Image 1: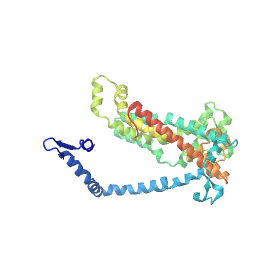
Image 2: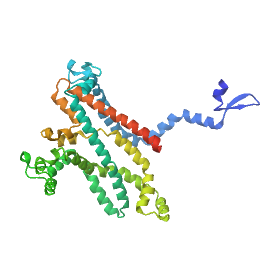
Image 3: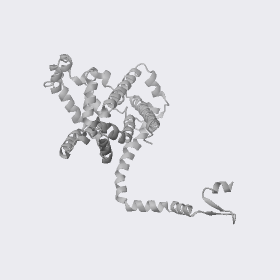
Length: 359
């Protein structure tokens, strides 16, 4: 038995009947013994780079990991302790998850919010994911560095505007005359000129069930598509020029080069980014939707399409003093659990289909 275990790394000498360690194995063993020294030397050599990691680690620890303890609120009864401290609550099990599924008063609101979350996120993925790729391919075809730089700055800039500014611009452009607002927005006036319902225009297109989702998706594209194209553009410019030259020799035009050279070359990047996008599929932006709802003042008009799980959780926390926090946390926990399942599923499918995966 000992011989069977040692045959992989020991050499048997038939003349003497003894085992000895091969030279390459001695080198590997020596390297393993001194691996900590090598690692320490590397850290000391590049200590400035590792020091730059410290702020990021602190941010993740304080804002991502420390608050996870508060997620236990969905398993505890807030009426049994200090409302500010989750650790004083008594254990409630899965009671609040059952309420989400069975309560006749709260369950319809939860499923409405879940449906809106999924639909809004699905439209965002359907239209929002291809657009950065298209922009990256477009930038790659612009030959003038000056023109390309100007265009990139123009499409990257909205990402650096705060959500408040983006939603304010949206409300100004699409506002109506109802509620004492000073004049119609520019886009609202264009809609009216092309025959849109005057009553809808006057009430504000953002606050209508017909136009809300389209406005949300369009403004989201304007805000994020340019910045998201940076990753794809980096993958595109990394394609070897010899691949283009070979395609040109074979008679491929611009569209054929994109189809047979560029897209296959960036496919792995596209798959990885798609998996990550699916992971955040149900994480619809709370701040933007809350601001577009008018802080609740106009929520009655487009509630059926605008209310999502994050805004519903906030509403419950504000209106239900006894169990609002627990219900809101349970709804968010369920939402995040489904998101995790989507990530695992998308990663497994991508690994089977294209042999490219996130892990």
